[in-house]
Length: 117
Image (cartoon, rainbow, N blue to C red; front, side, top):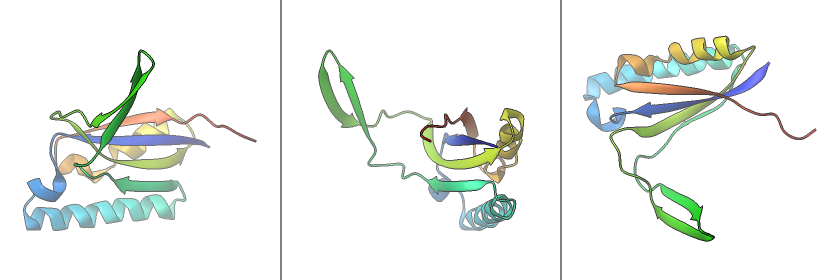
């Protein structure tokens, strides 16, 4: 088994763009999805990310800069850290995320590099 990071990017915010009824359904479907990943023992961590307050730390020409996060239509909305046998299985896990039914979404699937002993 290998670890994968699934980065969720949206062009909106489920917390503000959905009606109360839609948000309730989103929470139910998301809870069921997370519950199934936990039941299978493949979820190592997951969290939504706040849309505001992010900062970018960068270094260029020997100078560190701290600036507000770049504003764009697409934002990082959250992540899942999962285990899967290979990239194909990690992609299938990402495709099953019910957020695709609720808001314009992309999920990046990144293999994680093992470190340490």
